[in-house]
Image 1 (cartoon, rainbow, N blue to C red):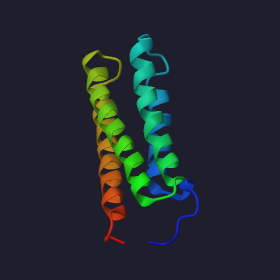
Image 2 (image 1 turned 60 degrees about the vertical axis):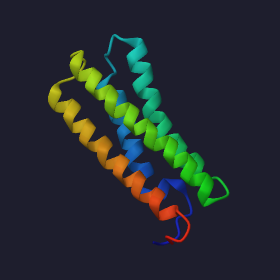
Image 3 (image 1 turned 90 degrees about the vertical axis):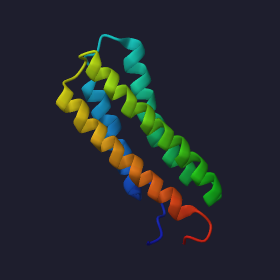
Amino acid sequence: MGTIKNFEEMVIWKMSRELVNQVYADFRACDDPCFKDQIIRAGISIMNNISEGFCRNSDAEFRYFLNISKGSTGEMKSMYYISEDQDYISSDLAQLRRNKIQQLMNSISSFIKYLKPGNK
């Protein structure tokens, strides 16, 4: 893997940015402010914890923040089930988003493993 100098170069950060924009679009017209706020916060948490961890001083700290990001992917995936159950979005769109979230979750997990001591 080449040296990454800025968090904006990371594929997982780019994926999370795309996901945040999709969440905003999916729930722009949602009339449930508590739900809307929580799912948007989960998406922002994914993106921001990736960037914050990257800017820390060690792989151990980076892994810590990546684990928080990964947890937020689980929260967001769960919330897409709620959004489907409450008819905030279509079942097809909810499934599409859950698949994208799972891809991001898997990518974050792979990166966490890569950062473990002895794996580089």
